[in-house]
Length: 98
Image 1 (cartoon, helix red, strand yellow):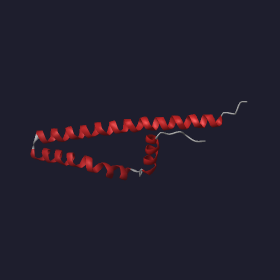
Image 2: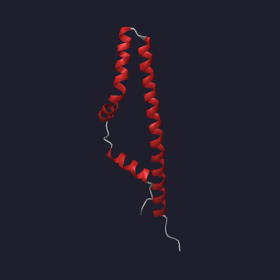
Image 3: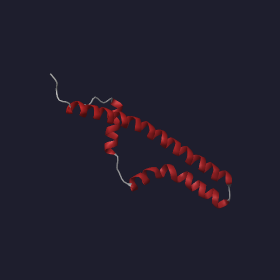
Image 4: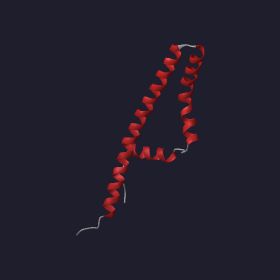
């Protein structure tokens, strides 16, 4: 039984297999992206600068949109890999007619 995956799907599966799972790993990996605008917003709030707070909020919204876009792409790859895996499993379970 061999599943015919594209190079992009193979790369996705290899990357997913190497991901370190857990809450702490997820927090630490997103910290470099979230900390600067959050700290900038906190600084702006502490000095009463509405522009700094608005800019920090805009950066956080942009980061969330980027994150959603990246996950939508990986979700499409994941669905493709799952569909091919299910099709291969169904073909293996079917008795040979002949």
